[in-house]
Image 1: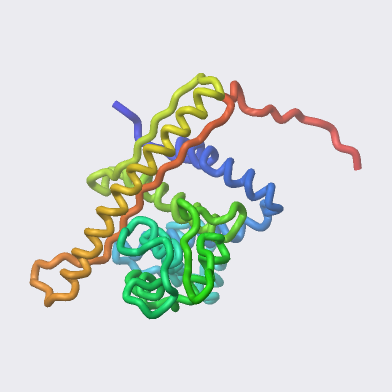
Image 2: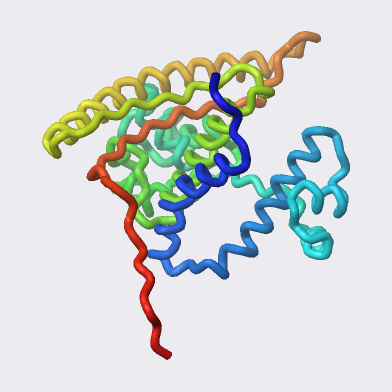
Length: 284
């Protein structure tokens, strides 16, 4: 029988999870003193959400007890208005480009305005909250769209992959990692009921040539799977939109859910043991 995850085990897991991210922060010039205030803020946000889910009022005392943050700091946090949840809007440009690529209704070359099958109509089929010109400029900036003469727009590329180091790339990584952690913690928490899909495979030791072959196979299979899922997601989205447009029945389901399926492959050299830190004398 497996043991429950106690505090000591959780701290070891937290260290392993954070190490790659902290190493990345150090390479980007972010130091320990910069992260500490943020960590306090994260604990308080998480505590506020936990209290809300159980129907409790997020008072300074309740937040302090649950998070371990000093009550004085909690009161300051509340006064600064940090309690509000700051959800980032969905990346409309990503949704538009993906639909443009997957749905045969939209050709690779579209007039910007006018025709029923125009870029403006494409954007409006996804969202009416963002102007089509704004979406076109964003896709052009990401080198995923090319403007041609007489108001025609041409789709570029085979995947929505923002440039390395860009804010868009960081946002995509953040969304994916957050949902992966939400999936894993859901499955670890027995009280949450049915588990979500979270599986992986690994193989070692392998030659670099073998790893490259496996990675290429994974990419090709993901491309095939991605097309199947996106087409099905599109048809389900249209069905749900049609159902939402008719008067609701008493037992009708709310259309307020979201779905994400993520895939990654990692390759690296097997580390026989962690790096050693040798004590050394310092000179003033």
